[in-house]
Length: 444
Image (tube, rainbow, N blue to C red):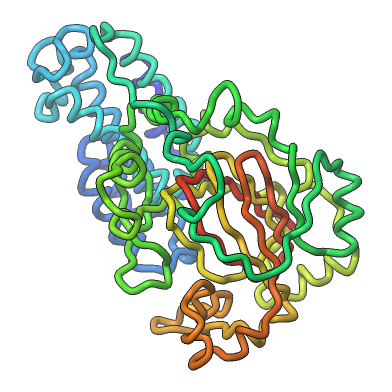
């Protein structure tokens, strides 16, 4: 293990002349081997001094490399305790003395090392170091799990997320259907989907996910499995706090996966409105690639678009460039989470892995009736989001948004194992009816 860590450090400190980190001052790079913490703080301040797209690459790379160095120093300092000391005892013997001031309790140093690595992934994407970070975390997890004696009684989370899901659709799900149902088809082929695209409308597709391990032998409905894939729940994830990003008081936080599960998914003592935490629009699969192995990109994402649909995709303001591969995002949270009425710049295949979601869609032709927002304070363009709370009381529509009642919509309740095609530019409102885990695939 120590040899492996030394080899990683050699990679970190071997600067190539074309490496972006060499744009940092030489005085900064000189202390990278011994003082990663102040460099993390420096890079963090630089990341927040620019808009996201304009951050100089050197600061992203410095944040990443300093975080890796910090994690490796913690591991080297404390790794002997995994074999030499009972879990939870302070590390005092058989350590690398060059890092002796970083000795700490086993659970504490594991958490701190993983925090450093996860923050690099979340804050910067770990440019150029993705594979290195993945290998470091997986090797550490194998070493820790392989070195410790299993406890006499392993705590297993009771049941699975399915035990929190109503067996039938009933009044508890609070759905009031108002529009036409989105068409549904089973076992659709790629050529069949391409024929459907000539009409360009939304479509529910059944039977396309039956081969996913996430629905079968490696079920995401099993909390114990998810905890194992996140290093005992130690991995960090970004969480949205509140029902919807348009609500007053909405916020964001970074917490351990264990805290997210226990506080927002498995705690039945709080009501829905009191306990909303949403792991939303996060590339969880780049951060934790082992979960990526439980799913596969639907063939529909590689469909050839009819010329009229392709032209529509490219005619939007600030249309995104052509994607080489679909963009994947995870959406995981309790009942009651809401994605307000909005549009996306890509076609979307939304796949439901756990639970159920209510989804309502409006054609781009209904835009004038949906009251798009404008540019808000700080210059943030919110024109892809409606001012309307789609499921608000009808008297609000009468007084503030009268045209909204005239807008025609289609809707569905998306169930486990189904996926929904949402065409680019279509307005969509999404509410989780139960604990829900979905994966979106954006493509163009």
